[in-house]
Amino acid sequence: MVYSFDNIEFEDDIKVKIGFFHLSSCSGCQIAFLDMFDELTDVLDTVEIAYSNLLTNNKEIPKINVAFVEGTFSIGFEPHIKLLKEIYEKADIIVAVGGCAAFGGIRRLNTGAQAPQPSHQASIPITEVAFLRNKIKYVIPGCPPNPNLLYKFLLALLEVNEDFLRPFEFMVFSTFACGYDILTEVVNKGLCTGCGTCVSACPTRALEFSKRTQRPQFNRLFCISCGSCLAACPQSFKPYPQPVYG
Image (cartoon, rainbow, N blue to C red):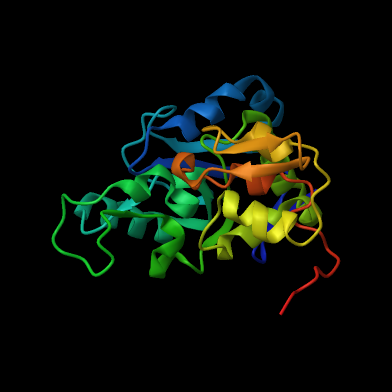
């Protein structure tokens, strides 16, 4: 088997080196990776965990193929700037893991502890850090992501399963992901089947299922913009054209 990441190929006798990196967050996403450890042992013959603040004792970041990054970037925080620049130099591709790294998540609510900024935000997702954009290949939403989803993503990455990976690649270009997207992109376009998957995926109960309409209802006050609902919805990434109402 040959693994390929952005035209970089590795023969099957060479392990794919991955690293896990933590910025400003609760570390729940990296714990979710640990929760899939039993399944991860099945691919350790093809994957090497080259760096992790939880799993390895490495002080220096080695050259790696895939960097999984959780948490938001704290504006003006020098250790974060240094870490992200080193990840950019050392990694072939970057995967933003969890709502904080992908969309800002609950860290969007954090303001202050910084010099005045035009955006008035102390933290931004790594998908909005300009110099990283050409390295961020995929986004895995969730707060935290389901360990089973993480494992399936890793398998798809190793097998270059483009059909499975396409939604994760698409979400790199999303600037916002919450219950509003379920309403505007799925419900309002007549694509909702009333399965309730988005409601089950929401970690804060910002979505509720209406028995009257057989559709989800959204409470913005509870939403943390983690993207779990949009990623879980089976209608979110349909290949056929969606209707547009002018």
